[in-house]
Length: 138
View 1 (cartoon, helix red, strand yellow):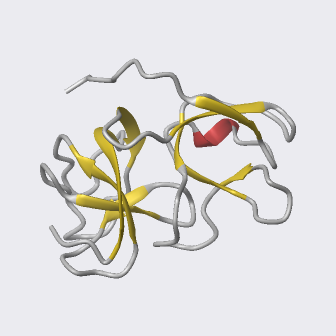
View 2: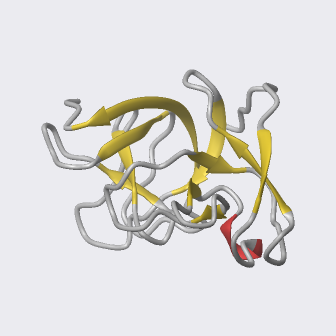
View 3: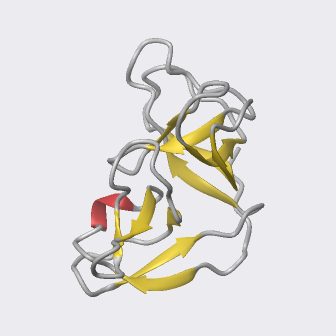
């Protein structure tokens, strides 16, 4: 499914080179107030980066609105990590999303709108940002 929703994201300054982070989850650095990948896996994520800011100080375009449909990178490298329709997804420390098991720890940022089998390449799928919060159940 190649679907995106045309709601305007907002722009904020990047804390570092985020050229390799398009369609990854991002957060705001609590010290600098600028965009960065999430601090740890399962930590709160602000939204999904839509562009490729190639250096610190460049504007990063972030989709944050709950109910917005966008593309996102997912991690399915480990056996059993496949993602199904509606799977709750949390951000990893590398900005990729991964399945958040039922009642699992972690901030649920989005829900999968398509499937992704284990080790599928490329690992970009369509998701809906939900901001369900920690310990959401499927």
